[in-house]
Image 1 (cartoon, rainbow, N blue to C red):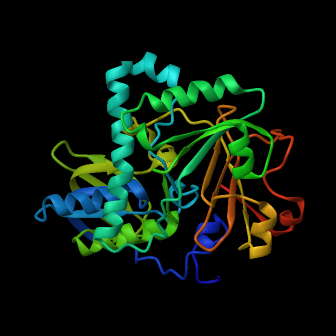
Image 2: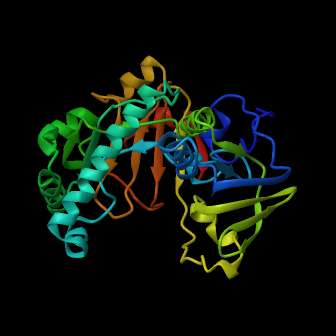
Length: 335
């Protein structure tokens, strides 16, 4: 693991195979489009620009290594549900715009699946389905979410689950009921990012890692981006910096409100057949509790682990999702 950059930042970076970052930019470079950030956004943008127009020159500048930021520390869910409270979404956008947003999310999952298949990407992609639940005593919340989902144009495959069905599926009587959606996917986010890098380079994009942007000069007709050992002159800039945007100089006017929010994840060692039997889950896949606005989530991995994201340290269930004798396998990773 000594050869893996930033292996201490997330489980995915530490367990996605050996990796050597691309060399940093040295000297001067002229391109049509420069992209700052080597995560999902930056790498996907580079790929799609080149596929759309092979005459457009593209360079990606990543300050550390591919998937160093949020893209390498996420849970890897590819879920076709907008992350919005249903009532708030309808008030903000109205039914027509909300339907467009729902279609966009649904089609996004289909597109990711098609891209992985078309480009033969080693992303550990799966379509295990997701089970949404609420704790007992929160039946109204479940009813609201279920109605919201049934109002979507692609809800025909979803299945409502009563309390007994959920209890059997998750081996727990803590829940009021649920809604199972087969159309839900997941990836290993670091593997997927590295594969996005591969296909972007194959499409003709240049990718430089260990290349932080230190300064940007607006020359009206073009920009000059200065790095540690070089500079880029570009007609257009695409920001794929997410939570690191505040590190760019204030003069650019790119300030954004940011909250110091943390998600703590727990991930087990690969469970044995005996462990899975003790857990008693009917289906391996994704679990998403909708009781609160900061819900706990859980997913399985291709090598038989459980990954849990805990957003509320005081959340307690009458019946734990993980048997006490399985907790010895838990390792903690912070994102």
